Image (cartoon, rainbow over all chains, first blue to last red; front, side, top):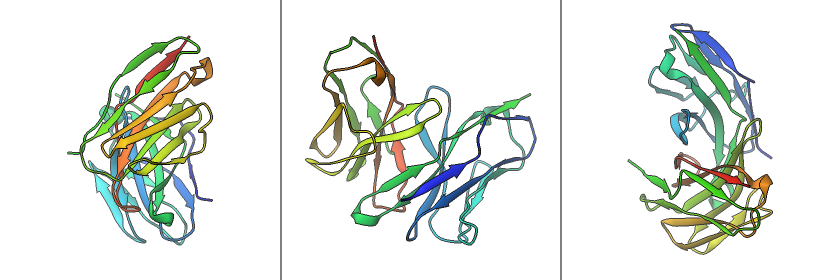
Length: 114
Length: 113
């Protein structure tokens, strides 16, 4: 079956530091890949996505590139802010069977300190 | 913007009670999902539905049932609540797989005492 592995947290960074959160996956077929973010007390919301190999998703200064050769989708941001403190989930979706099957990683908590 | 609305943010119920968690989406999505989220375990799929009156078990369906009588509404039912069902419950909806992302509600934090 499909699986998503992301780095364990928590990750603590100083403001303006560079962020990388690693995500690797196993899947059959051609999944789409997503990063979701969960701010305290809220549900998950889509941060960015990529639907085919070599696609780069980007949003709010975050980027991730769909690397089929390394089965990875690492999340990066050049300069984090305190407001980026949240839990980040990597996920993949395949449409086998005609409906969505979404597999989530376990989440990485990011804390940014001033 | 897609809106997924869960009827309660916080619920406190007693052991043995029947509990209904309601979820409504406004984007005409075919697919709807119920997850529970627990520290250290991430999101675990309870049930999902890909059409009205259709449902499929997820990874942890025991102790739960669901109802989808209308396309926009997906209900999670705890037939007899137990303390190990204390958790955060997240509803989501999604469009055509696999490219469409999921849209989540803000969650219901259920405490069973």
